[in-house]
Length: 621
Image: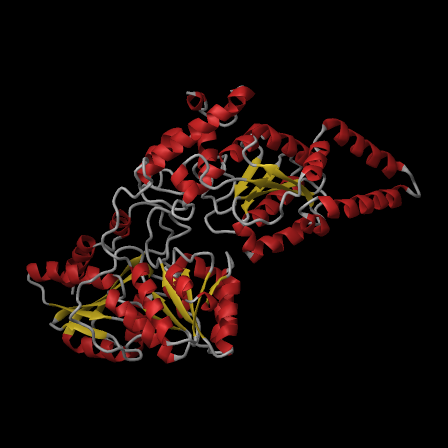
C-alpha cells in the first residue's frame, strides 16, 4: 500500500505523480473503514482528500502551516503527518482527537473546533512570521459554509491590507459562491498559473516600479484595466474588490491542477484566495447521497451506510422537534431560528411544516440572536435552537439585544453538558455560568422528556428571555408520575425524607435518582429535589430542606464557577445556614474527548463517585 509509505510529515513527496490518484483511493478506503467503527466526520474528510494532498505536496511541514477552519476535515492531514495508527483510538478517551490539536503534533498549528476562525488565526500567524523574520507559508482553509460567519469577513477585511503573502483556500463543497463561467475563465486561469506569465508579470511590475515619475501610475492603470476585464470573465471579484487576489475556481479533485495554483499563490505579495470546488462525501455513495447524515456519523455498516446500532429510543432533540411542531400548529406567532443546524437541533420537521416561519441563518450565531430579538420586538415568539457550545459565541448579543430590552426570546440549548467524542470545543459545560451572569435571563433544565415539553410551553407564556438546556442523547422517561405544574422559580419535591437532600439540575436528576437508591441500600435517608430553575434559584425550598437535612448536595452537569451549586452556597452563606453543602459538578477545566459515561466517571459526576463523596462528607459531620 502506498499509504504505508507515509510515516511522517512530507513523506507524500516520495509518491510518484502517477500514483496520486491511487493514494487518494487508499486514503478514502482507510477513512471509510476506520470511521465506520469509531464514528466521526466522514463526508467533509472524503471531500478534502485531494485538496489536502495538494497542500502537503506544495508545502513543507511543519515549517509551513495549515489552519483548518472548524477542523473536522483534518483526517487526511493527520494521515499525511504520520498519525495513521492513531485512527484506532480516534475520538476515544486518551486517543487521537477528531480535530487539530497543537499538543498532538507540531504539524497542527492551531486548535480549532468552532467555525469561521481560520482566517483570523492565519492572519495572526502571518504577522508573527513577519515580525520574527521567518519565511514560512501560512495557509488558512475555510469552507463555504463557514463564510456565513461574520468573523470570517472581519478577518478578510483585515487581510486585504496585507503586503505580504497569506493564502486562503476556500473549500467550496456546497454553497455556490461563484460559478465557473466556462472556457474563458478556465483559459485565463491556466495562463495565470503558467511560469512564463508569472515571470513576465513580475518582471514588468518590477521595471515599472523603478521608473521615478510614472511607474506607479502605470501599474495602477494596468491593474484597473485588468480588473475591469476580470469583472466580465472571472468569478470571485468580491474578493478582488476587497484587495485580495482571487484564483480559481479550480477542481478540488485535480491534485496537479491545485499544485499549479498553489505555486502561483505562494508568489503573491498579498493575501490571495484560492477557490477550490470539492464534492462532500466523494468516493462513498451513501455519503454523496446523504451528506448531512455523514457530517458527523455514528458507527455504520459500510455496505449500506446505515448505523450499526440504530436508535430505538427518542433523544431530547427528537422530543424538542415534536413539541415544536405541535406548538407551531397552535400559535402562528411562533417562529424558529437555527444557525446552520436544522437537522442537528431537530428543526427540520418544523421547517417542512412551516417554511415561512423557519429561519436558518447559516453559521452566524451572533446574527441569529439579534435577528431573534428583532422578531420578538416585532411581536413574534422566536425560539432559537443552538448547541450549548455554539451559543456562547453570541454572549454579547444575548446581553445587549435580548436581555437589556427584556425581549421574549426562548433559547433551546441542545447538547448541554458533556457531549463526548468531539471534545473540549464542543462540551456544553459553561452555559449555566455564562447565562446566569445576565440580568433578565431565566434558566430552566428538564428532568425528563415530559418536562422538556412543559418547560417550552411555560417559557412561551413567561414572555421574557428564557433558556432551556437539555443534554445530548436518550431522553429520560423515568419519574413520569412526578409532573407538578410549572411555577415560576419553583423546584419540585420528588422524594421527601431526612438527613441528606439531593438538589439536582436537569440531566442530573436521573443520576440523583440512582444515587438515592444506592444510599438507601446502605442505610441512608435521602430526599430528592428537581431544581427545575437555575435562575432564579428556589430560595424557599432551600430554606425548607435546611430545616430537615444535615447535608445538602447539589448536582449539575456544568463547571463549578458560576453554576447552580455556587449559587446555593452563596444563598446559604447569606442567611447563615448551619447545614453542610457538597457541590457535585464538573471541575473548572476543559474536558477532552471520549465516551460520555467514561468522562462522567473521570470528572466525578457518575453515580458511584457521587455516592462515595456523600458517604465521606456525611461521616465527617
